[in-house]
Image (cartoon, rainbow, N blue to C red; front, side):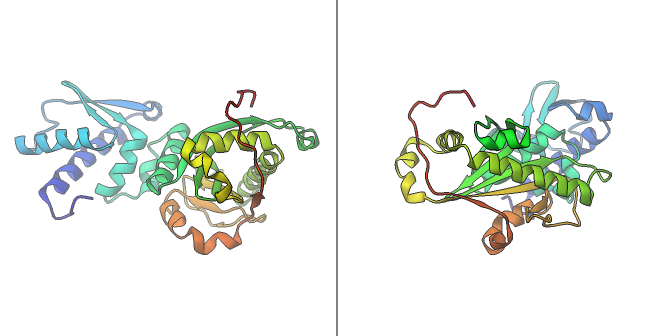
Length: 275
């Protein structure tokens, strides 16, 4: 990261502040767009020197900051912008995340895990072919984000909740549903095979037996802060504000969480798309 005492840091911070202020002034309906175009009017760069502008151009090209500059406007990909802006603005990531729609919120969660060296897939859908599906009257499932590191596989439900829906009842209901998704997944070895095959490359698949067993842990990531950190069935509830710290401290807290163990899987070379 650029030193906070450098001229480049001050320039990039000023740029992010200007773009954030522009997005914040937009109507709610417009901020739900994944990409936002901000006009580069004559006064946009009024506080920037020519040297600053060159720094900005180099920065936007070399780093995934969500900014693409054109002659008359800058195109902002909000999830990338939020992740980078958290480094340069005195605005926490929870407040920045309120600029995002629910789909972008999932994308932001994915990127935070990727920054922590997890392999990630989004919106994993599968059909439950076991008896469990008949017992629950649910045969189709979707997991918002799946993050894998070593033997650990996290099943993440992204909740773009506001204050009114972020209550104990909603949290316990969501945690129960996420636990049910984990149970459905564990009862379908063919689906687990597909999941592992998607997450790992060919070299890693060849070493997969050395990585057994895998541990599956369901969790929920919310937009705003929660009073509840662990649901009544021991599903961790983590706000986006604490997500990075949660990942870094995971080894210490892992013993408190509900989980399932995968002891045996069959990796097929050509998995079908019937899931």
